[in-house]
Length: 234
Image (tube, rainbow, N blue to C red; front, side, top):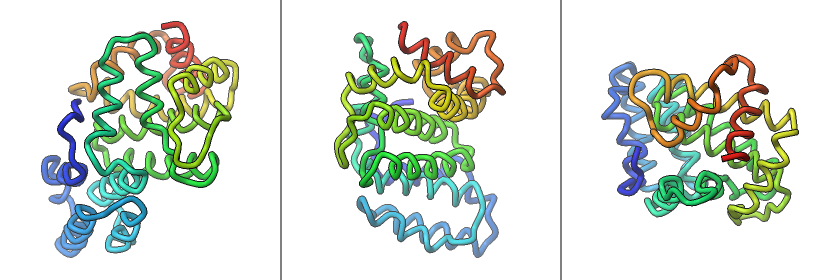
């Protein structure tokens, strides 16, 4: 999954590519279309208002828009931030995954807890969208933001550094709460984005395949512990 050419509009144009609009009723499809057009021009802090157009609509298409809106409100309005994240992941350098997570961490809210709440809401919408690529993005953003909170170096509007993420992983491997939170996000996405059909991102899916071999995927804490230990040791 390459985000080097991602543009804000492609976050929502995925609706057309995935055929999700076809699953909506006629009136709902009109509302989703209006929200999509609104989102195409949205900027950080304004995307949520576009979602008022689809209030009460519970469909994969509407969920994908809400997922996209979360990322846009967070500041992913240009391709550079996604490109930076996936360039780091594919660099092959030491701790490249940690650099990737540092870029994806949500940091626009005033406190670490507010950022975790915001990213969790966004992740939940991404999962409900059933769009594999967005599920993976949501999962990694939630993981990264959980780690950023644990790092204890949070400042509003400031991304955690690679070193912050490395230190947080070293702490999280012995933190059952962090393990469970990260494991819950990873497990759901791993099944949908890595085990079923084409992989959303080979680098991440290969890591999960190795880390989760012989791990009960239904045990969130065990999943989180396995992934965190893999990142710590590799």
